[in-house]
Image (cartoon, rainbow, N blue to C red; front, side, top):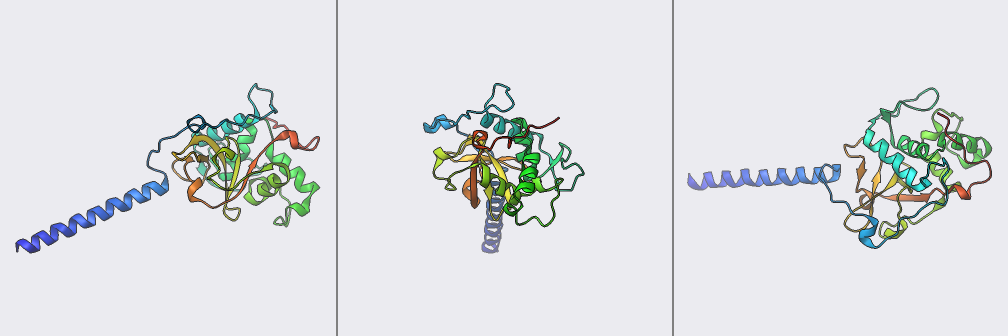
Length: 234
């Protein structure tokens, strides 16, 4: 009887330990656990500063892109990719691409108009588009990938090259399945957190080491052709 009771207690303890371990793993991958953040200075890294201040607000473009992405992350829009006439969803709604155009809006750019103009001028650059639709084209990761490939500075996709990852950079994951903005917060290895909207609870996450990176860009407006930068109209 005593041995049977001890066996029962042991099994319960084992099940409890397994449950706790499972919950911990789930919390880790879902980003529910708090993680200590580090700065570039903690690793002796300099933060890139853009030579462009497009909206002339006294803050360089890279810092504005970061600020815009953080605003959207803090606003925590409900994940919804519904179609909207006019293109722009309400501030309380969005997907991963909405965080990106909102980041560009903070720097004064209309990413929607810039992408749409380029689609009209260079349709072969966007083979996935069968019929142009300015209301949704700028909200598709593949189209943003094509635009940044043409006009932004391509950078490393290796998360270990920590100096090459700077706040305000654009990162694309998978087979054009997801997109985000690089944060100024870093993990214990110096790899940056990513600001993104995949419907997850925390919108600033340490996902770079866990996701397949397919593209990494830095948007430098000084590299754009004349007239290619279009201002956001309120």
